[in-house]
Image 1 (cartoon, rainbow, N blue to C red):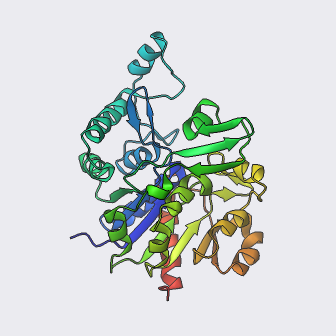
Image 2: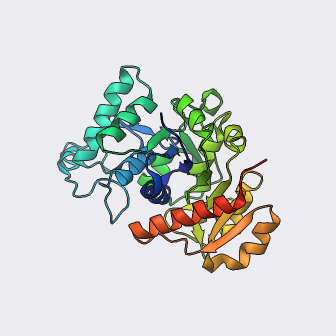
Image 3: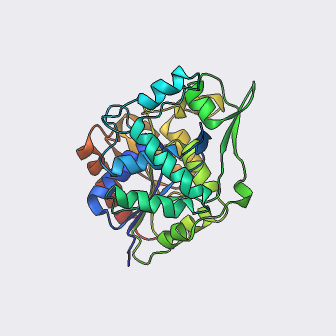
Length: 318
């Protein structure tokens, strides 16, 4: 029987990297609850970008240069798709297509996404539990002055080159946490919950918006530690800083901490943002300043250990 010691909340490349660091410490004791708000169907394929990035990263086959996709990928499918006049703005490698096709076939048979992901993780030799935030589709919609956009159209097709005015998660009121996610959060062995350095708006907010999931996280009793995805006023990867500025918030570690106030016990920032420490502490969080940039696999494990040690010093919630 699995004894979950660590739960991570993750989405995107930064989330997958820290989850990998945590898995290097205790793979069997780790459960990663992953955002599914950016899931979509493209050219008939069911694609789960954040889940797949976590799968490929923990499975040791992620493209090291870009952080997503499969290392050593080939592109015959995309070349032929473009030749036939199909949409080629979302790049799908040949090995990647195999996973999407298999997932889609099983979803059409009525199987749960959680069960499918568990089998894919097993096939890739992953000992950690990779858990979709919900088995119900909850697509992220980006509001812009030109109208609403599906997330992947905004993020990939338009390369985030339009201002945002807000986000919504369609169908969120019908979504529920999976039994597996609730079991991980209810584990009597749980020692820490780590909010990875993922985009707070489109990676972490969808997870926290699933009815009942934020409450389960807060009631778990384990200390909750979040890592800032913003270092020195810029996102380590992705559009988080741009989104924050466009929504009228400070693009800073402090700005991220404000979004997590009331939920998170400890906040991890980079040394470059040490000037924010006092203001973050005033929000009711302990602060750890460290090197928050994961430059290689050893750096992922180092930051993961620092997060767990930090959580251990905070002690259990009352």
